[in-house]
Image (cartoon, rainbow, N blue to C red; front, side, top):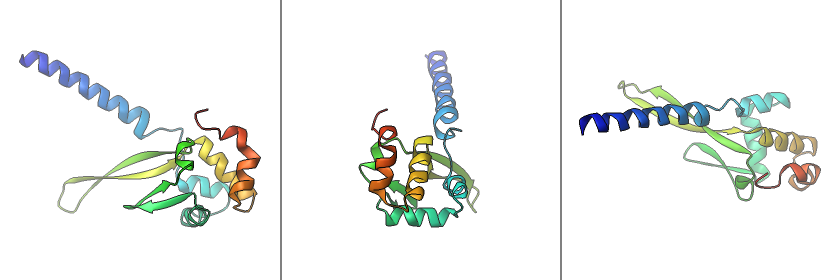
Length: 130
């Protein structure tokens, strides 16, 4: 039984590493800073603009997308680990943008932050599930 449970532990560890490598730290996503720099802004200003447009909101320190944007594949998350002052390990989750999210932000910028105009410009690219 011990050998059997040890084998399952190895499988779990491999799955955990795979999840970390492919999902949490995806290189196909961009930070807010990266996208903001592409349009000549700072990250805090981009978040402010997206909030003013009604696209995102902040909860428990993380920027999240309002519906229906939350279902459009515009974002993902990354998890960052850090060491607390007492030596324990903590984590924080932050929002990152997919290539689709990056495109949406560029369209918003190009359309002076008018969500309806931005969606009209790239509507075929934003169809949920594509």
